[in-house]
Image 1 (cartoon, rainbow, N blue to C red):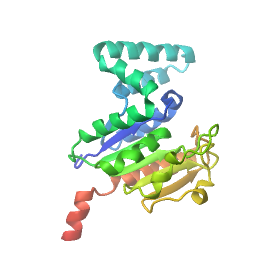
Image 2: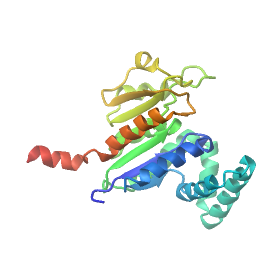
Image 3: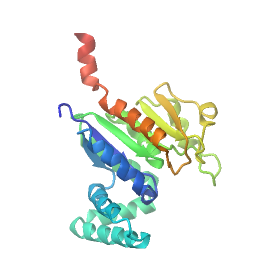
Length: 235
């Protein structure tokens, strides 16, 4: 495939809640022929593990959890830095994840177009650093505007007023972290596009909304790369 792009996946805090969602998205993204990268160093292997488990529908949830922990230990034995990654992410989440994302995304060094596909807090973190990096587009499924059990935290959303990186926020109309009311409650940069679907923060969509979401994601992925746009404008 000519002009392959990098699709960088950034999950929510408790990414285990999104096993079905993650597998569905990855299965779809693989069909695009682009390169898929994960924030979690073991992301690709974990995806393969879950894919096998999904074929064993009779497998109890507690066995899946044991499989996950066992896999992480085995992976860590061959990649010692993974244990530090898991510990640092748990204990210093905001600071650590921002720094780790910057380091990972900087490695691409403008060689390819990068699209971030994020979920919940992953959208918050990626939108905080995108303008300082060469990011083509951010897609966020369920942005966490306000934690339902906490007071207002302006640092969650104020930067969205001035963000320069194109960003699509696909939000559930009944999302407890911000539903339909966000379009009137918050100020957004012209670079931010909102798309609403019928869902809560868990993002369980019906077939019609899934089609709408995947179609929109495909439109962004298939968009002409920046460099080609410049060449076309100058021709």
